[in-house]
Picture 1 (tube, rainbow, N blue to C red):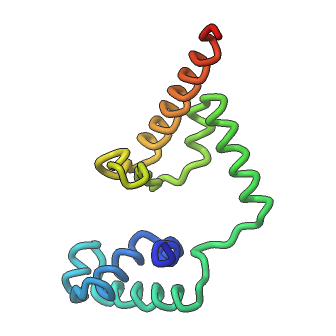
Picture 2: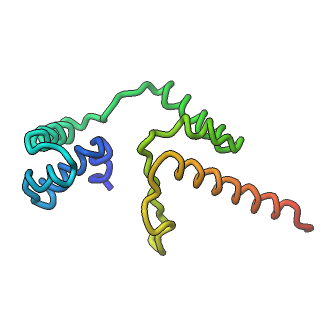
Picture 3: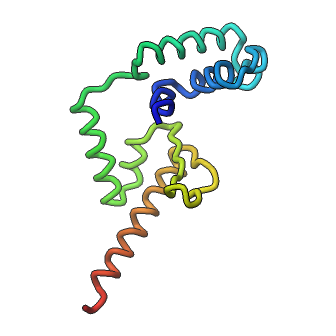
Length: 140
């Protein structure tokens, strides 16, 4: 879990370069081809990634108020079923990975992109709401 938290601090390309080189021992020329960057750029990305990991710095800083405001907007969009508002709270490169507690994957592959993720989240909310309302409506 700690390693995952460390990787969260890296951008997607930094994370790929770091993992491919430092964990899986790929050469920079191979990594450059995989990520579509020059060898020199990949070396620099690896240096930055290592520095960020050692310094334990997040990729970006946000205030507590800003985080809370974004969380409030996200939850309101989910509750209201407002697709446009939900999309506005998500990063363009958002990824959802399913976890069902080790029994089996919730989804066989990661869900990529704001359109797919936002629709998935709203469908899940709608399903839970429908199930909840059916249980309330049942006679005692």
